[in-house]
Image (cartoon, rainbow, N blue to C red; front, side, top):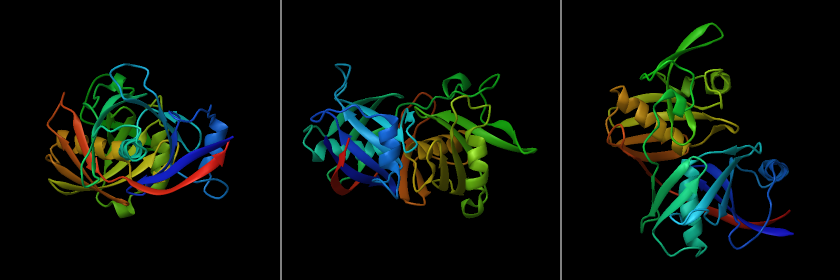
Length: 276
């Protein structure tokens, strides 16, 4: 059978989006790996699947798969693309939609200029909520890799993140240290690792090594986690502009217990069909 899909990106973090509301299929990890291959498939960082909701207080269900076939809890850039997709495909006429994810409920608002604001909900800061192995909550935690100590903030935005401050993201060891911290024993479900450079109290630069995907041009939940980590430690003040290799996201956070609001673009690249 043939499945219609849309290729989209949020600041270069790219996605294959499948509508399984008007189409019906059982997508398996082997399909995701095949489609995700940039030489032999469509090529993407994540596959996004739009499904009917399982609860009456949601408009849609949103599932996310990394290109290696693993299902993950949340993806901020994907959430913005999800919102544009369901509106562009006329699956809804609402400008604000509630979406259930594996990481919890989120709310998406589409502005007239095409920018999408995502209410990511409050960050989860308790170690057991990340999850992260620690005796109690702290602003940062010491981790050892290859005999060297690194201080990381551990935060969940519906998915686990470690945030490490660096002097310069351009020379940061993202591709060597990132994969080691991703699978560190302190993160029982692995983690996305953000390398954060502070520019001024309202601006920062960020590179992210994503769990199951490697370094991507942008990571929405990573930008949220980095902003939260920076605000908690007094390095940043809300609102924060986070500059990623693929572009800029605006993050607002009023403090513990308050939701993180992320605003940025979502772009449709092309339409296509794949055989299942």
